[in-house]
Image (cartoon, rainbow, N blue to C red):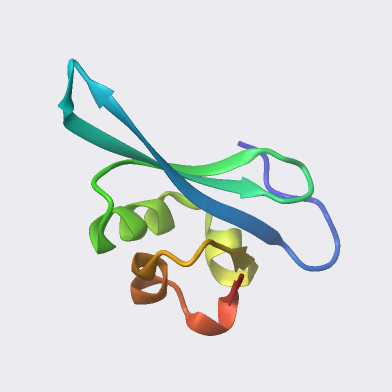
Length: 90
């Protein structure tokens, strides 16, 4: 994955969607982080819809995004438990 070359503020959009494997009882959540300008997927995590899932997505992000990006999310509480509130815009 290339490092962003853009000057100015890095902005990512975070969201999660569910799917299942084999049976709807085996629900899996796909967490995605998308660069708002390039539309490139810069982070992904598959797991449950909990604080652990939000943390897995955070850990999948390249360092430059963890350090500098402003995150746009929905109102899911797990984001606020992992990401700094000052970095989150809704």
